[in-house]
Image 1 (cartoon, helix red, strand yellow):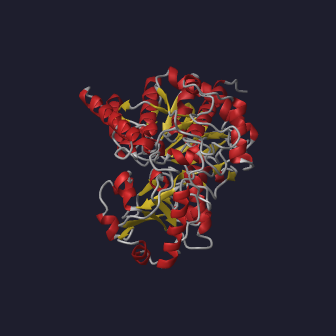
Image 2: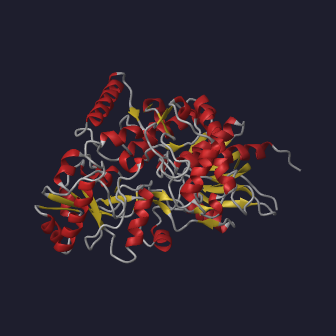
Image 3: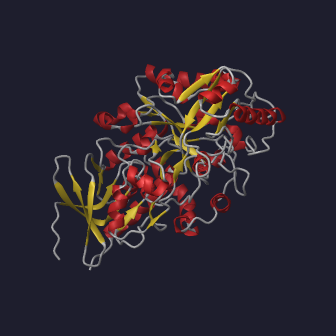
Length: 549
């Protein structure tokens, strides 16, 4: 059958987050002509809203800072952290991920990305074989004035407009209560002021990563088309994908021939409420970008792609903000001392300092037997005074009016305000206070690892994560199972090729994660997106150059 096309490129990329940008950069660097189509009116995807860290074992900065890592050590850790998680996390894909990291690092550095180590950030299971501190990297704050007209459509403008680094966050959370926190806070302030004095508009975190990548793409001559969603895949008589249909901003359907392949990097389905209820049992309380609706996954599945891990997500805890369209992810707040998390009955049910995905899984699992959506983060007044609480930065009036935040002079009165049995919450607090005094959480092991301690207060003894709840007024904050995006989707091989559909590639949250059902370290979402996007882009570019019969 003769196909008709409106235009032709070597590689068509769907999505403008880390996965799509990495794929496009790799393909263009290999000499391919590349077009990126983005379904929304903003570029950068969920990556631009994220912390922007990449968990990159064996990256060159590890050795520079005195660390010792290797491919085999990293693979040992992945096995210990992930275990058996199905074909998405096969040994072949894990090895491809780890072995490709130095290539991706070097390519992006050569093209202008300024890497910096998050040298103090531990793996999330540092006590398991192969675990260590310092595998995380990020990008130096970026002057977004360099984006020119593209700044107007930058999704990073919806994030924090400041030169913040991932490696700042753990110390800034206690900037006014510990000496090292104060020093880091001062550095952040001076970095901000120095940027302004020099006439720069510095953004950090995921904004720095995506802005850096866009400047590379623009230099490479890659075209980016906004408001251009994928609406279908085009196959030849053998069933191989040879192009796609997209809808332009004007509503016109355009057929694009993709000689080397179509690469899907359009995110997961975090804001597809029907799918979230079907696969996760919750409507979703996500921090992902609003265009994360799962359309590329649906279209690929209809074309014959296999789906895996659809029942999982990059879970965590979030405060459900009034209005329902945004939720504040909670990290250090639940790990710092002078706090506990309880279910609706007033009982603790997990290690509050555990990695966010484990904490999210714990809420969902607890909710099967005891109502735990929402759970309650209970705070002593010392927590309120000493530590940063991101959901409170714009005040608590609306949160209190919505019942999301409640306070009382005593633990018993707080229990009544939260519709719990006062005696039961009192018993929970008393038991925890005993652990805080001894330094050992006999129920859930909170504060046992260096990861737990990373979001702790070293001035609190004997355990930096355990402080007794003794001083009122006490505050309770609702927590729901939030997420950074979904982690189920298309099954891909080590090259990022979609299993069962020739000519189709995918990376990032459009795919089932190589990390399985866990989160080995800081940046375990973005790093595989970048690595497998790179591998897909490189392979698709090679296919575009291959001789045709």
